[in-house]
Image 1 (cartoon, helix red, strand yellow):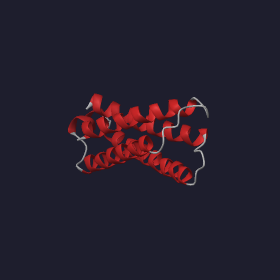
Image 2 (image 1 turned 45 degrees about the vertical axis):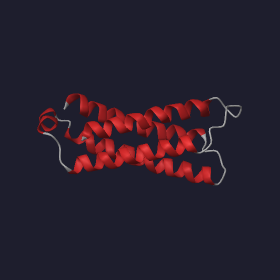
Image 3 (image 1 turned 120 degrees about the vertical axis):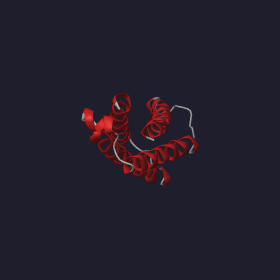
Length: 125
């Protein structure tokens, strides 16, 4: 089930990368509306929920033997923090304010760190 959580979160990261590229193009970039960010949020939320469900089942024997059992919990914490920053960005968007580069950078950093830890857990366990 950890593999499924990783797959879902990897798709969310891919969509988020596209959103970051559009944002980096500046104010002259094509406006994408609210659909793609909403899809990104839904995919990321489902991935976080699956990750939490997988962690409730317990760590595998291989991950305990390799010392990576805590990677799942750390990844869930980082992704949950990215989720909270994403909610802050969404609240700004609903008030028609741009999310700002710093919030996007913090959100991306937390999410990428969480997905990277999850990748290590999947690859080693």
